[in-house]
Amino acid sequence: MTSPALPGCPTWPEAYAARYREAGYWRSETFGQLLHERAQRHGERTALVAGERRLTYANLDARVSQLAAGFHALGIQARDRVVVQLPNVAEFFEVIFALFRLGALPVFALPAHRASEIGYFCAFTEAVAYVIADKQAGFDYRTLAEQVRGTCPTLKHVIVAGDAGPFTALSSLYAAPTALPPGPAPSDVAFFQLSGGSTGVPKLIPRTHDDYIYSLRGSVDICQLDETSVYLCALPAAHNFPLSSPGVLGTFYAGGTAVLAPNSSPDTVFPIIERERVTITAVVPPLAMVWMDAAKTRRHQLASLRVLQVGGARLSTEAAMRVKPTLGCTLQQVFGMAEGLVNYTRLDDPEDVIVSTQGRPISPDDEIRVVDEDGEDVAPGETGQLLTRGPYTIRGYYKAEAHNAKAFTDDGFYHTGDVVRVTPQGYLVVEGRAKDQINRGGDKVAAEEVENHLLAHPDVHDAAVVAVPDAFLGERTCAFVIARGTPPAPNVLTAFLRQRGLAAFKIPDRVEFVEAFPKTGVGKVSKKALRDVLAGAPSPTPVSRATR
Ligand code: OOB
Image 1: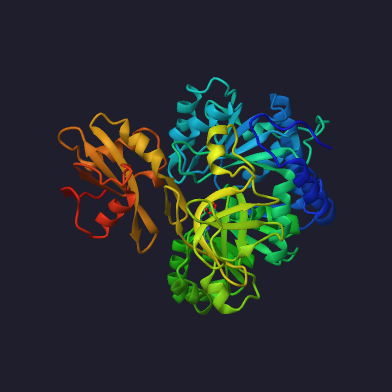
Image 2: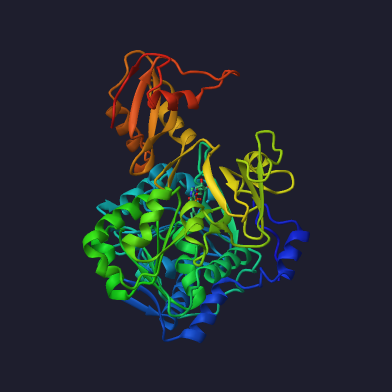
């Protein structure tokens, strides 16, 4: 079954789609059907554990049917966009599967996003609904909803898990299941992921049922998940890594149990691992360090853990070597991106491959090119920019024609912006980055987005945001600012960015005032020279130091 492509969503040329179907990658299944089928097969098994809640596959499927009926009664229809910003609670999965059943399209916001990001997602996607928790980690999302609602005329519903205040209570929407309109086609877009990005505003990534379910199946195989697996989701569930690599959705695919942790601190997570007999979980590198420290005294709590996946940012070889001795489990490096391509070290790879590479692709049909600045392939083993094309890598962002022309080659390869080399065994090693982005311990910060917000301040003449190496996060952000007249205090600028509703992880860690920016040969701001200033090279202009 096919239906016309969603306007603004580039898709695979028919010849590729046919090839991916023939190869058995795309199996014409949707998420709605998948859960239903698992409920029939594993009805009484535990699908999801979150706090006090334990849902079997049958319970989850039934709750999803009720909620789909409720969303339908509210008027939510196929292809309607719904911004979902939920923490790691069971409702996250009830909501997204209910939307999948209807063919409505979740936009996966992160809990850290604030008015700037959420307002943009709602406006850009013309969202009809916004789903939040009442409060989490001391933040009241209903206040954010008040702010956003005023700016987005298409937004008809704010739906709240918990105390709804003036909005619609999610709990009121679980209705008696009714006949629903026919669900989406497997080739339809299922949801939007967000790009870490390097541009002024985050880009939206349209993923189809066909392509995402294939990436789940491949991930489940590689990570050897089955119905005895217990996956712990300690990172925000909306992110592609804990969602699908293999993540919670891969765990459902395999009929295993997914456990949601409300936060990722050892105090919270270790007792959950012990109690639920967790077998596999995923972390970003700084978290791996924190867990390794904590395990010095509490390793016994981790006895059931067989695999620790680490990804989202580069893990140093030194840290990688400590994982097995410290935590007693196999390390799996994961180098992925919400746009598609995911690489894994295999569980039975030799130790040196596991500690010193970022893995190899899921699919034999993931095409990898490593190119120089002119787009020419480099010699095998040489370092260059990674381009990729394949059965679960998008062919373009949502409604971003001009950007797509730059981010994709004419023949559909995605410019990842990552600088890599490929080992003779076909494993990728991430050597650096060519995109204007800071990777703050797995949280991606697009320099241009922060620069644009800084430029909105009346005392800022120009701004350039760069990465500073950091022992814990890998990188932090530094904003170089040319002031108009007397420089404002750095905390005036950071407070200004917060007040503009920018997510906390994008607020510069450090602000440096300079009188001019160093330029490249062609007159562009040289971010490399700015990074060199931070590394202690002679400064091109007087610099005054300040830290947030
Ligand atoms: C994951 O996805 P995103 O979309 O937040 O970020 C993708 C980018 C990559 O292009 C790369 O720059 C960086 O994050 N990255 C890594 C890495 N994993 C991701 N850089 C070095 N080493 C790694 N292991 O971050 C993501 C999505 C799915 C699975 C895992 C991570």
